[in-house]
Picture (cartoon, rainbow, N blue to C red):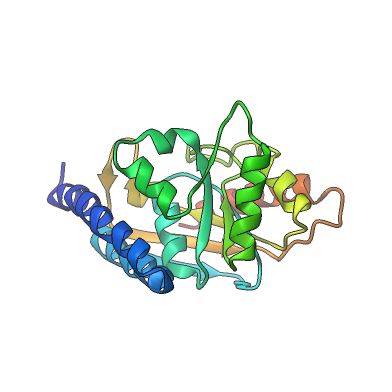
Length: 223
C-alpha cells in the first residue's frame, strides 16, 4: 500500500468527522464546505479532469454511471448546486458515518421498499429546498468494463416530479480510486456531459441507457 493511499485513508476519516458537523452548523455555507472537501480529496488522489460536452446547471436530476466513490467526490466539486444523493440503505449502517450521512441529506433506498411514500417525500423536499437529485441508475458500482443495466427507480422519480435530466458519463474513476481494493493512482479522468433530457418521450429511459453505454465504451478507448 502506497504512502498516498495510507494518507488518503487517514485524511478521509478525519476530514469527514470534521466536515460533516461544520456543514450542519453552517448550513448556508454547506455547498461551499462540501466543495472544499471534495477539492482537497481530488488533490490528494492526484486527479486531472477533462470535461467534454455542455454542462447544464439548470437540470434538477443528474444520472451517472458508477465505478468508484470518486464519482461522488468529483460531482461534489464540480456541481454548483447542492446534491441530494440517493443511495443504498446499507450506507446508513456504517458506524458513525451512516448517521452523519443521514444528517447531511443522503436519501437512503430500501431495496425491499424502493418507492415508498417516505422516499418520494424526501425527494420532493430536497427539490423544494433548491437542491438537485443525484442517482446512479445501475444501482451499484459496475465492473469497470461497461455500464450495467439500469434499474427503473430513476425513471420513476424523474417522471413523478417531471424533472429535467443531465446525463453524465464518468470514465477512468476506478483507475484513480479503486474503493474495493482501496488503491489510489494519480492520473486523468473524463467527464462527458450528454444532452439534457425531458421525460416527455416515452422511450427516453431506454434510449439514455443505450447512449450512456455507447459513450462509455467510446471514451474508455480514448484514455
